[in-house]
Image (cartoon, rainbow, N blue to C red):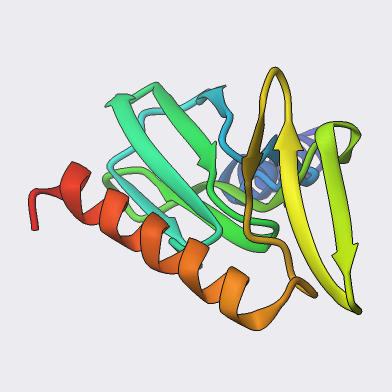
Length: 147
């Protein structure tokens, strides 16, 4: 009976060890980066939507998550054996305390005013204004990617 209890305990413990780690949502502010230290050794990183966030791998134990635009995506990290080390949501927020929205003749124009006001693309803004800002962002991104 003692061996049966020991065998059951060992079996239960091995099941618990092989279950993937699941964390709560990771919140990142847009245009900010947060470090994420991993408990295991990562071999692959999968990000659901690269328009919402970006991942930079420092080494197999440390990655950096950068918020790109408001929204939610998922992040999964696996070890060399394909075991899941992390499966979490990445929630990118906007620091609205610095945002100012100007309404001109029924059209919205949003600015980030910390420390000086500069235009930012915000859903609900005038479509021409919004589109022009997105075009500028794409051009800037192309410069940093070398396209």
